[in-house]
Image (cartoon, rainbow, N blue to C red; front, side, top):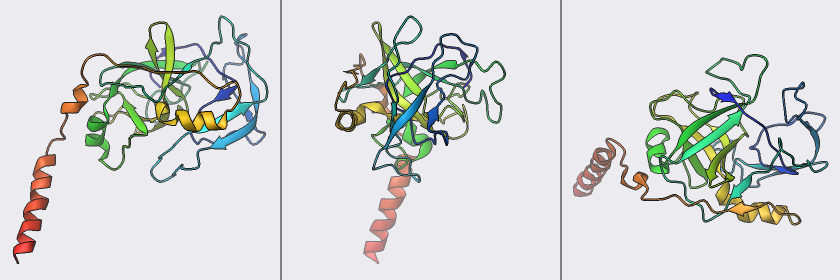
Length: 247
């Protein structure tokens, strides 16, 4: 992740994607051992979404229950989760954090401070132009620069994509996949948290997380997006079908 140093936060429950945890069942919440504000907790329960597909990366989300709560303070605070009614228009500012690579094959150098980068939301229509119509579903949200240069990368998977509304941070996505790192025309793809409000609440029956609806202003420019060459491909298909019927 190419960006600047950031602070960390966590909850009793964490929402990463399908990434293996340590063999001892532990989850390291901070790589910076010298940070006096860092905490770590063991994982006592792992809930993988039953609809997860390793081939399509659909439903790329998991719940991790920590052994004990984390006390909030000036350095550790919770993040709200995007409610089912949330809308994320193209161009909406978002931030992603992680300890992953800062470029393709380039590891985060010492002292490996948590990094953050600001990237705009990319609408699903535009994202489908890059990855293909069948690769991007309603359970995904994309973010990044179409010219490239800023993105999540290998090692950031499972990290949060957050959006700010007034004085609240809302988690809109979970780092899932992409075509390399920060490549032009290939934004990062994230699990869309708002699609999983019902599932999360059925798994966490006590002290449920707070869901906040994020509402974008104006009109979504993604509604007017059409992929270059898409109508020509459709025409060729229809023309071939018509010709076949006439034979």
